[in-house]
Image 1 (tube, one colour):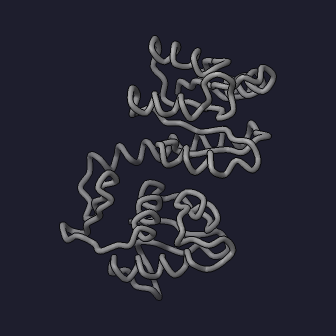
Image 2: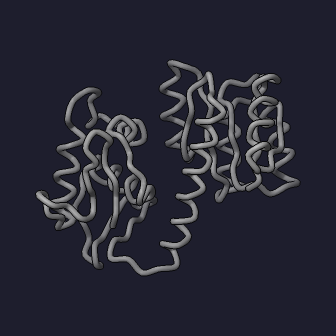
Length: 223
């Protein structure tokens, strides 16, 4: 894997870069958004770790430009504590994940590995037939060729679970990734939406096979 790490904090950039390289990842460092764009124009990368708060050109502007020019590039955003609007906006603009500073090198590595697994599985799904089809641009889903009638919240949850097939996602993580007015922190709205999804997918609520509940951990899409 080739990774571009973009952050204006010299110490953090070097610490994260050294750690990831010690784990077998080829890392290229950039100290600004402008430098990141220059590097991207000359080299190919699988993933970019991108800080939001940078002078002159912030991470969201870099994300906007790379989303147009490099649509296959995966992106993990680094945000400051309390910058929830930036996190939500970043995800809406196409970021694949985010981490809140201060960043743990071990957690960053875990997120990178998880994202790599999701990409590999996405490629496998692309080349295999499946009764469930999801169109993220049109926000439509079908099962065995039959359109599913889903609310906005149900589609968001289904798309996230499907993209993370085989990975357990906690309720809080699902709400972070699919944040909307339908989700209220600390309530059981996620459970209600999952229940409706199971009904529409024809999943047995007593013994679900498609969206399973992992007690004390969250939900997992098994297909």
